[in-house]
Amino acid sequence: MPNPQLFVVLVASLASMGQFAIATYMPAFAAIAAELAATPAQVQQTLTAYLVPFALALFWHGAIADAIGRRGFILFGLSLFLIASLLCALAPSIEWLFAGRVLQGLAAGIGIVVGRAMLRDRFDGVRAQQQMALVAILFSLAPAVAPVCGGWLLPLAGWRGIFGFLALLTGLLLYGCWRHLPETLAPQQRHPLHPLALSRAFAELLGDGRFLLLCLANAAVNSAIYLYVLSAPTFVSQHLGLGPQSFAWLFLPIVGGLILGSFAAHRVAGRLPAATGVRLGHGVMLVATLLNIGISLWLPVGVPWSLLALPLFSLGLMLTQPGLQLLALDRFPDRRGLASSGYITIQQASNALSSALLVPLLLGSTLSLALGLAALQYLGLLAFWLSQRGPAACHVPSHKEQHT
Image: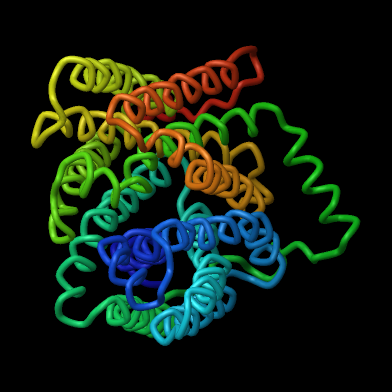
């Protein structure tokens, strides 16, 4: 068993590959359209081609990992993602790029789902909450680093070099997991992929109202910030009037808030009950949404004021994440892989719907994006409040409560 720090770095890296697949190639949209004779709308839809299979496959990853174990399935997923990245790099047409993105979407979720289940396999209680917050700190770097890497690689290696870079990162992570990532699910704890038993497990998962509300609470706030991530090409180039090397103006404030929020979540883990941490995060996000709407109404679009509310929102978002994850996964302590799949599936399905429906609808102005951010946060707060009503609500004790 590797030391906890290396284990957390590997799990965070597995989760980050999905972020890199989304954001690294965004600065290259215009170059892809020019070389492949595609329309801007077609290139934008390569995001949807990734997100839809990503969301649809997620629900099965946990069940498979619960049946065959964690380590081998992660190695398979990384190998498939490596092949898909090479296919994107060599794509002779937009249709081949769509095919590569679909394969990337099918593979990327394996590391996210199974890595989270492995973390919960190994750590319990307050320690699990703290380790999830550490993963979130490392994971938060990906949305900032990815588009910056893409922006600097574009003039050096072209858009194909960006996908080659993804293949190289995947190869390095595959080697690291092969050498250092252990199996965390003993054979006697596995659940066979028997259709009847699996159907019962899915029915139990989907029939748990509190679990679904916690999943919705998580999906709503993550989709809120994703409105800005997925609209980055238009927001940066048209609204802010900046060039393809300037994506850092949008992503660095968001990621700065994510990192600060992750550190804050790590600090409060064990000191506050999980539900209290979620409420604290929503309080911060509420202030951010009101500030964002006010700036959009009364100030002209520009740097830096059009970005001021985003790091504050991101900070509040990260305060909610360890608590929401723990409360949701602990609804099903014997089927954490399946629960992790359901949790992330709902989040990514929400992101895919945002990419296909909400982002095109809200792209027209910074005010419409600000209102979309607020509406999704309020939806998440409502779902969380409903999940905590009644005496049967999940409760993860604080450090003090565990020692009284």
